[in-house]
Image (cartoon, rainbow, N blue to C red; front, top):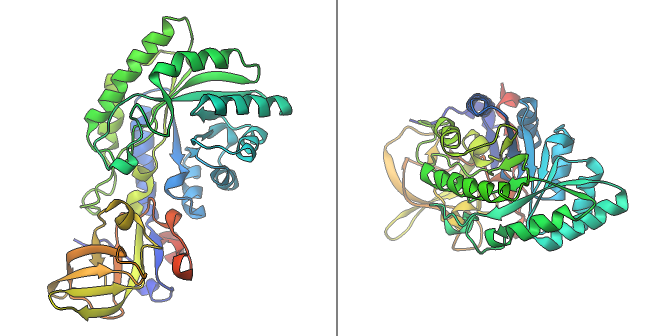
Length: 386
């Protein structure tokens, strides 16, 4: 079954472009809010790095979510979209001074700190401004997620976070600094995780660390477990909303929160992934020696995930119900890696047909580039096409 798209409206637009189904987006956010509320004192921050389209951000903000930012640019985008600074958290292994100062000036809720040198700089810059910065420490729980190696982030040794062995020392240093306030712990083990056992392992590790810290009579107000829930790239029509029920229930069952604590989540892909599709036109159908090529006007400059992660996106011919034929679906970029899929079965393809690359709402438009001097793709909401 194909998705539903207003193809008559598409003919008025220059391809390639991103199309966001706001009904799917709103249904997803409503499910997040409903399932998260079962846990009690919960705060959900949308991970802006997944998609910073202004219209998408506005809808997410309208539904009361906060923002998880990993750059000064994302903080500015969140503030411009109307997210309250009190709901903004700022993570990232390499925060520049101007980005930290931007967060301090805006009075964001919390800096998720990833190293002692970063902590020292935050304290110094806050002192200059006469500010007090809330900090949480991103701890590497040494939990391996069953996902692509490039998006696994919770192991003992990588560029992100602070090792468990260094946790006590870092907390001690923070407690001695006059312009930072230690408020919690932050974790993130990876992305596109569909095995709930990975989150169970994270909960078990957090429980151990909480017990260790409480034995030192240190009070923790906030536990941030990051995001990571995956989406169904194979069947976007069958499962447009990810399994948030199982996701949040896993934390409710396995994480031993204290009554005074707030539990924070930072979903990104799970919120916006299924609402977005990259819409492209077929430029040519080329008959090779042993295969056919469907050559699109979209390339890896518009959607880099297949080239970068060998990621799969379901491809649909929106203009045809003809017999199924097999194609290599490729783009126009002068690189051999500019391939969206090999041996893909599509309804017979002709020049000018519209093709949709599904489940592209996360890490699609936001990662686009102007390589080959190509224009960046625009993004349109379904609300604009009614």
